[in-house]
Image (cartoon, helix red, strand yellow):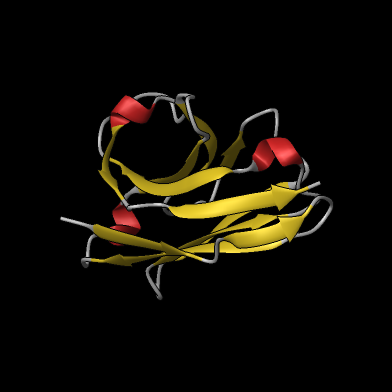
Length: 124
C-alpha cells in the first residue's frame, strides 16, 4: 500500500514556475514507477511525466517536454515536478500516481495508487 499526498499547487502567471511535490508513505515506494497526470475541467486525465524507480529514466508528454522536469528521492519518499514556462493550457488539477501494472507509462489505467491532486492555475 502506498498513500500519496500532493502539494505545491497554486496561482502563477503565464511564464512563471511552480514546483509540485508528492509525499509517499509506505516502505515500498522505491519499487514503483511514479507518474504525474493532470486533469482540466471537462477533460480526460492526461499523462504528464513518469520516472522509473532506480535508474531514474524519465518520460514526458510532448506538451511539457523541455519545460517540466520530474525527479524523485527514494530516501525521502518524494517525487517532484518542476514546471517552468507555464502556459494557460497547463492549468489543471495535478495528480501523483504509482504504477502498479506492467505496460507503458502513459496509460492511467496502469497506475493503482493516486493522490487527491493539487490545483494549478495559470493567469494570462
